[in-house]
Length: 371
Image (cartoon, rainbow, N blue to C red; front, side, top):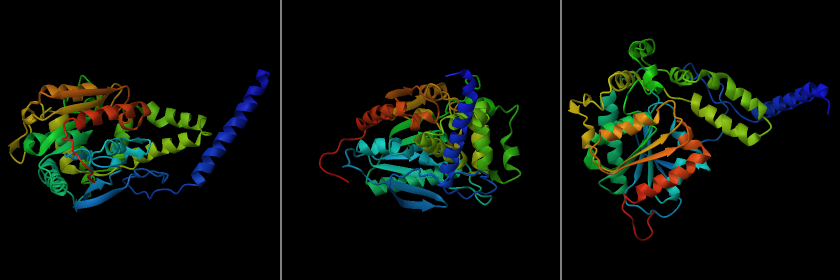
């Protein structure tokens, strides 16, 4: 075929791609938006694994996922998510769900979902660790009838989990840190570099609003890779617009990225200043309600799940923390994935079967049928 026809053929393809995208949008509703989330987000299904709310306090909710098979392990798993974004990234689709990996392995799985902060919610780290997390872990222990739980902390949730486990090690059987920045070295990069005190004062973020707006956090993360996040991915979407499954997966991710939550001012400011800017957790300078948070108290089995291409929480910033804990049972699981790819990419799903196997060996095998 003559090259002279190529522009015309490509023009027709582009028209067809545009019509496919238009057709896709016509069949979708749009989520409500406000000044904190000023985005047009398609209302595409996410987080569809059935769960039951068993406890709530001040907008924070505790869920138990409905079992899909008989329970094989005595120790339940509690997932502590970050204060930012929403936890359905761990259950994006049935085929790409960390939640389902643990359910299919026979674990009793609970999830703590943090609330959407307002100007009235002046919670600090003290409240999040020593009230909310303490009370919610107690609720799981009572509900499951156990003395200890396993905890998986994702991203900022890993930091909260480390604090709780160092303060109350008697309540924790096993720990998993997932893509968690815990050792704050500026030379590694990621959000630590972006939070350098010479250029960033968290007080300036919260002063105009009384809280941290979801849109600020979304755009701050996107600025680490502006070309990809503002241009390249949308070009790729258009070029693949005739693949409806790809469009569905793309907008599931877009929904999660832009469907964030507001963060309480006190917790955000202190977390940035003490953790990101002072490395207080590793250096033994962090106190919660006057109690020293000593990582050496973390003597239970600990695993780190990290991504080789994680630009938000580089693998080093999770792995290095293991040198500061008191545990002698440590394991590193590493995948060729990024921060979010660790929980949604197909190549990472196999890794979660290995993580579940590691946790199962330390969770007390049950005999008989238990649901």
